[in-house]
Image (cartoon, rainbow, N blue to C red; front, side, top):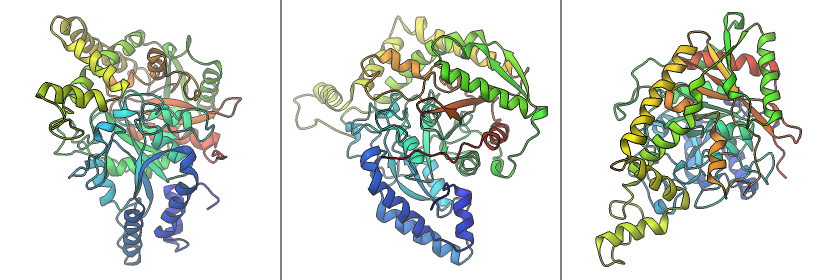
Length: 487
């Protein structure tokens, strides 16, 4: 396979009987065996099950009973999604031997669509991080430079797609965890509107912020996957009952009717000059395509990081309370003299430093005497932030900004300074408290050959428009065929 392996390209080959799903799956399993020892994208590889699913897909195709555009296509899933009968760790030692007895809605939809699940990808423990260095098992490497991080927390999924260790992958995004690693690894990463995709069966980080989405090699593939995983789910009361469009069928748009807003607050101090320059070049490309460019201001963005880092750890502390050494996961029962010791030692032994840090911070802001001062005010500021986006979307159709303030940084460069690591999400974090959809689109490279991503943000449930605008840009610059050479 010499050309880029997208869902559409492979489906054409399958339809023309030039290749089988089993052959495609073997190709990817062979690449995983050859390269993943260097990349460390996967925590679990399901070779036997993947080949069985591929054979079933070929049998369906022979009978002309194709289930979807994803039927027979090998993909990877972040190890935050519960998968029935398959180990699900959230990259934490506390869930080292956890095997769910049920399937998450997203993975069930993928299975029902005929996708071949290659395996589960690495992440920061419980999705707490921006570099995939916080995994309890291994550090994932960036395929463009193995000395650098792939971003996080969906770094394993991003690296697997970038290194062509799968056709596409699924990640989750709480404050940029799909978009930031997509940017650092030179792929497409889409975070849908909050509630567009069910959260049922996803190990929760911060429940009011989490959202699952596709990570792919191009815009069309992201559109195809979102068609399949989006929709109302009776198991998730926060999912919306809105029709799901066939996003991949309608990817063309006349940009002369589009107004693009450029919030000045996303540019300035802290943004790498190469990143800023590349984003501004991309904005000029939109102008050449006929779009109207308009500078806008969202002063309330200055509160976004503070809002996020109060609400997120508060919800984290509540969600981590269930890992108590009693119900499931690692337990010190039989090893400790009393119940209090079972609780404290089980958690102390198996939680990494980042879960402990966030649980302590969250417990503090929720504690008596501080709840009103911090958590309540953060929720009030969150509403102000949401209204500020609503206001600016009356002036323009979409917003454009950088995804990450820098290109991929060196492994170990920021691990000693949690605050500096948290700042890696400064451009993506404002989107989640507002519940907006946003995408990371590859837009160029630094002088060192490292990918740079552009963020396109839309109003609630504007997924179709974001795909259309992104697709126009992707066709114009045509860098999607550039892939890393793994040495």
